[in-house]
Every structure is written in structure tokens, then in C-alpha cells.
Amino acid sequence: MEKLVITIGRQCGSGGHSIGKLLAGRLGLAFYDKEIVELTAAKTKLSPEFIRTHGEYFHGGALGHIMGYGTRFDGPAKTGSALTDQLHQAQSEIIQEVAAQEPCVIVGRCADHVLAGKVPTLNVFIHADMPSKVERSVVEHGMDRDRAASILTRRDKARAHHYRFYTERKWGDPRNYDLCLDSGRLGIENCVAIIADAYGRMRVLAG
Amino acid sequence: MEKLVITIGRQCGSGGHSIGKLLAGRLGLAFYDKEIVELTAAKTKLSPEFIRTHGEYFHGGALGHIMGYGTRFDGPAKTGSALTDQLHQAQSEIIQEVAAQEPCVIVGRCADHVLAGKVPTLNVFIHADMPSKVERSVVEHGMDRDRAASILTRRDKARAHHYRFYTERKWGDPRNYDLCLDSGRLGIENCVAIIADAYGRMRVLAG
Image 1: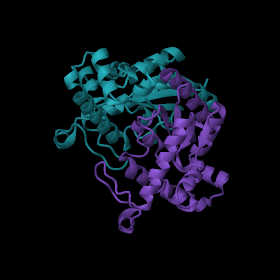
Image 2: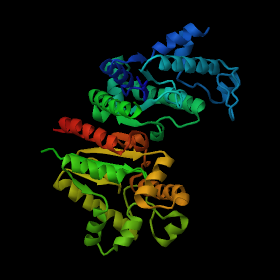
Image 3: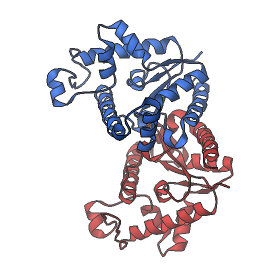
């Protein structure tokens, strides 16, 4: 059977996690989001807390560079010295391992880039307008309404920076994805259905 | 009946025109692409040639500004003096007129922005990798293979500049669209099917 992996990049609060989980359930695929944290912790000596904080978020900038949180690299050579580089390397290996085992849905963690050229993928990006994201974050995750927009914006900046750092590509640029969906306008259920439809069509192509 | 209009922005060579036409046929909707040129010519004293050249492409820059091809505006006030501003105004009125008449598919010409807040829309953007776009342009439109990539890139730059000038938004930014699709990876037919699926779901939402 052709192994078509669905990768989901997503803005904070856009419901990308829920969409991925529902999608995996509907299509009978394995699902990896926070699960990657546990697998990475088991593979490395890094704490789940460190992995959660740095596995998708870049807390760099000038100070971050000096502190060795992330070392910018030119060309193919990477430093491999900073903890965040080790984390990215371990996480990427796990993504490749789970993707090689079975068709699955993988949320975040540069999975689209990590798997490029290795296994067939359907690469999806989920975004939404800020009011929808705030509403979702307040209702689903109990986020403080007054601070939600600023928290979501800051997290997305750290995700974008992380993605740019490790892929040399722009996070959320539609050219990196097969399908980008506005979950605020389409709704979570419709996003699931549209991606499932596209998945069925891509499998026909890939098979 | 709820009037849900499909707008399609597209990179040159991505097959956005074909996707729109097939989609309109499948859904039984009116279709507007080059048709807008004729309607605009009939409404104004502008030649079809001028409308084709400037209706979606910004040939501005410093010289363009001096020549009055397009005058940058700040805030809500527009100059209205330059021919391109007149063209954009007339074209936008026609887009609003046809969208008010019946559900339809409208390709390009900032239709997503022109119709925002006026009629319910499903806003789509079609993109593809350069080899797919070159192949399509050579096979479908007889473009010279050696020059195709540079021609497509130049045209897309002029489209992006035109969109930015009249909407103050970034062309191809997924946040401006409900759905972005890679026609190179998904194929033309699959794009049509996926958009038709999303359209059915949006109509349920809108109805």
C-alpha cells in the first residue's frame, strides 16, 4: 500500500490539532502531535518540558545565538552543538521513523520539510482570522480572552522563526503546501472533510 | 438562493483559468475571466488591449508613477485621475454587477477584495511549482520553453504588484483565501473536485 503521510502546519488557535485528530480518526491513520514529544524524550536525554518549549518554537534572537539556543548555519553544514539543533535532529529522525512505519497524520515540527523527497506526503496548512482563533483558544483551552491575541501572535512568531531557521523556507507560504485552508471561514468539520477528499485523490495519484 | 461567488486568484501557468472554467461547468455557474475585458471595454472608452495589459498587471515603478500609469494613494482617498485607476474602478463595478446577478466564478482582477463584505464568496488561490507551470504554458499556450520561466515570473510580479497596489494586501498570502491549492501536485481535475466539494460545504454554511 502506498504510504501517503499527511503533514499539518497550523497557526496557534486555528484548530489544526483537532482537524488532524479528527482526520486521522476518519481515515484510520495513526496520529502524531504531542506524541512526538514523548518519543523524542525517550530517544534523547532532553526533558519533555524542553522539547515542548523548543521543539516548535524558536526563542532565539541575538541573545539566543550567544546563549547557543540556536546557531545559524550557512550551507549544508550544521553546528550540531546547540541543544536545539540536537532536538531538531532527534525529532526529525522520529518523524521519519513513524512516517516510514505506516500512513499517518503528523502535526507541526517542520514535518513537511523533514519528509520532503522521502515519503509521499499531502502537506496542509491551517490558518484562521484572529477572532476565530481567540474564540477557539478561550473556549477550548481556557485562555484568558484579553491576552489571547497577543499570546497567539507571539507563539506564531516563534513557530515561524523556528520553521524558517530549520527549513530555510517561509512558514505559511502556500507554495510549501498542497492545500491551505481557512478554518475560521470553512469550519473544523469542513476542513476535515475537504482534506479527507484531497487525501483520497492524492492516494489515487500516488498509488 | 444564497449567492455564493467563487473567486480564483492564480499564478500564471498554474491552470487557474482552466480550473475556473471546468468548475463553472460542473457547478452550473457563470464564468468570468477574459469576459471582464469585454464588459469593461463596453462600459468605458478604454481599449480591450489597454484593459488586458493593465487590468491585472501593474507596469508601475518610478517611471510609471511619473507617467501617471498608477498613482499611489494613502488612506481612503484615491486620485481617480490615472487611466489605470479608472480601469480598476470600472472593472470593480462590473465584478460587483455580475456577482450580484447570479452565482459565478470570477478569475483574477482582485475579485476577492472587490467583493469582500458585499456578497458571500469562496476565495481560492491556485499555485504550482515552476516546472509544472512551464510545461503547461508550453503545451497549452505554445510559450517558448527557454523563455517561459522568466515570462511567468515577470507576469506574476506584475500581478502581485497590481494586487498590492489596489488592495493593500499581499497577493497569494493564504490569509486572504479560504483555500489555496497546488495544481502541480494535485492536478487540474483534482483541484476542480476539491473546490467543488468546498463550495458545496460553504453553500450549506451560507444558506
